[in-house]
Length: 146
Image (cartoon, rainbow, N blue to C red; front, side):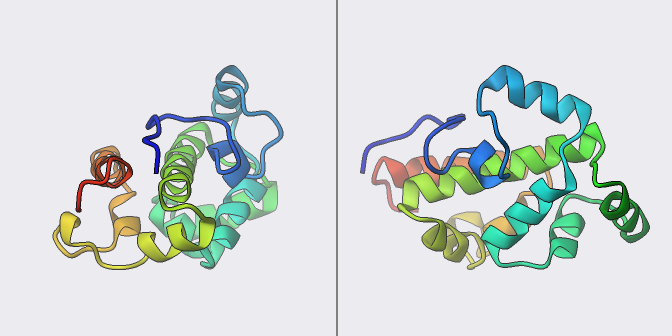
């Protein structure tokens, strides 16, 4: 398996694809995040992870009432969009390293020794946690047992 760059934006599993967004150029993605991603992007990643969209909302730190409001307005705030993009980037990287969306979903939802026996998905609520998960994925891509 060839090593991949940690911030890959395109390809069959890129963050834009995970979020079901049209463009995948970094400038387009930046503008979309700054404007606020559509609620459908959150639903797309929930579907790919086979989780209820409300669980993704909890992972992103969106309170239940705010989540219900976002579902009605169909638009996330820039801060929520940034956290959602971070999640999509990690999901994309997992799919790229592990070879499929199904394998990524399994890996992200199973306890991992390299993360103190915790589930990688639960680490994705912070930037430092996301970086640790991505570091484990990079080690896997280079064939280092993690």
